[in-house]
Image (cartoon, rainbow, N blue to C red):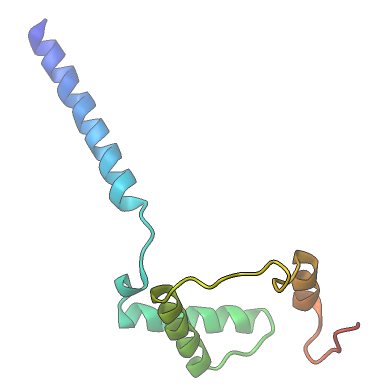
Length: 106
């Protein structure tokens, strides 16, 4: 009986250890310094391709610069957000659906 208990305790311990490892290290979000320059270039290319597929235009330099600025933003202090200056969800949707160059009132 003792050997069976030890075998089950070992199996349960391994499963719990693997679950803890996955939860602790597999689920942690990556930081900007975890991204290599090659991966950042691939991410910029992916962003450019996604924007172009949706009918927009994004130069390669712009995507690289936006990613660098985002990394700097994450390192810096948090911005204070005022709800009065944050655009409402319907305004964001209207901006996204508006054709390029169309006036705001349409």
